[in-house]
Image (cartoon, rainbow, N blue to C red; front, side):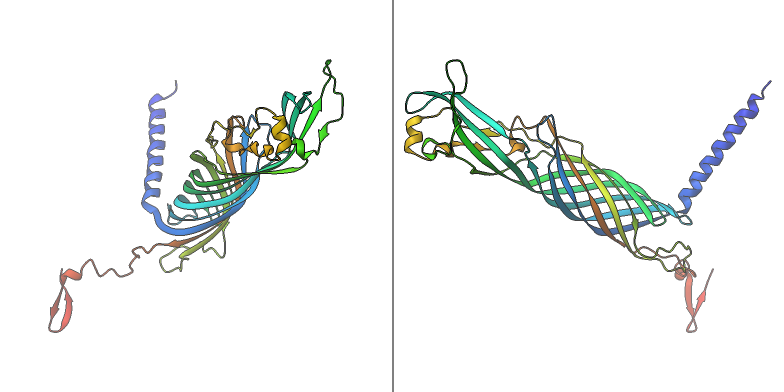
Amino acid sequence: MKNTNYSVKKHQTYLVLLLALLFSGTITAKVNNYVGAYGELGEWTFLPSGSKYGASFGIAGGAGFLYELQAGPTYGQTRFLFDLGIGAQGGMTAFMQGSNMLVELPNQTDLDGETFNYIYEVQDRHDTYNSLAVKMPILIGLQHKKFYMLAGVKLNANVLTKAHTTANINTFGRYFDENNVQMFDDFCNMPDYQFFSNYKLNGKANAALNLGIDLSFEIGGRLGVVNYAVGYDVPKRKIEYRLAGFVDYGLLDIHKVDTKEGFTTPSSYNAREAYDKTTMIDNLQVNDLMSTTDFASKVNNLMIGLKFTILFQLPEPGECVICRDAYRSNIRSRGGRLKYEE
């Protein structure tokens, strides 16, 4: 029969040893505090879901300040890291539409009373976003010898976003017979009738983005010579330099839906107005994609790049070789000499 008491005592022994190891690790742990600054540069992307548009492409950079706590065994080479910071990020990203968009106004009437379809064709549309955001990273990680990694979240608040939209517009008329068969070639390049070719259309507006929370991961290494020796009399570096690659992926939808349409056209074609004026096309309105209802069901934020960090170790009480402070109050003067009294 198996000795149950022996098995219980054996597990109790393992538990006591484990607790002893954890306790001893805590006793020998060394905590250092750092302050520093960082700079980052990378590719910035909006990822729309459920949209006919692909991802945007651009560039962004940022800088900020941070506090870092390092903790680990005094005689070990692996340390725990905790980072808390505040910074700003600015960048530009753009959507480029590959296919054309057609908007058709059927059953319109020209000067001769003939029925036709008035068609708007949108080509080479670019939606560019310039944004300034405030970021607050909260990261934890490990450092082993020269290598380190951090993971956590970054709170992301866009404080200023400008949208600029450009496109080429072609407008033309298409005539059909009673059997709905096209009778002529498209009527185009006739400005007096509001048929334009390659008309430049521009739109500028402020764009609002929702608060974002980015899931962040970075991995890299310390630059320069790293001293692994221990001991009070061994010189230690008070400044650390790091270079790493990082990825920030937005967990929340930053698309703030508005009631606008991406491309707004006049509801009808006025033949006399079209003939008398050449400004009817000015009624066309192009709105940026990120503020329209039909753009995407969700838009996530993504940034991939490089990050440089410099850290300065804060002063801390040093270890004394001959500690005099403990008995200084018991030293009395005797005949011009200092004498220690128990």
